[in-house]
Length: 108
Image (cartoon, rainbow, N blue to C red; front, top):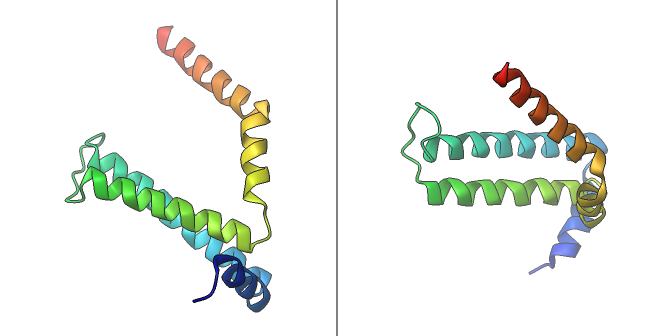
C-alpha cells in the first residue's frame, strides 16, 4: 500500500494542471451539494430528504476532505491556507459588515 504522500506526488506528476483543477472544481461542486443536502436533512428547508443528519454530516466531512486533497495536489499548502484564513481579518471583517448591514436594513 502506498503512503498518502506517495499517492499525492504520483497524482501531481501524472495529471496536467487542467486535470487537477477540473478535479478540484468537481469536488467543490460535490461539497456544495453535500452542504445543501445537510440543510435539507436538518429540516432547514421545506424540501425533505431521506438522508439522515448523521449521514449528511459524514458526507459533508468526506467532501471537505476531498477538496483539501485536491488543493494539496494542486500545490497549495493547506496549513498555510488555514493559517491565513484564521489570521486574515479582511474576509471576517467584510462578512461581519454584511451581516450588520443586513440586520440594520431589516430593522428599518
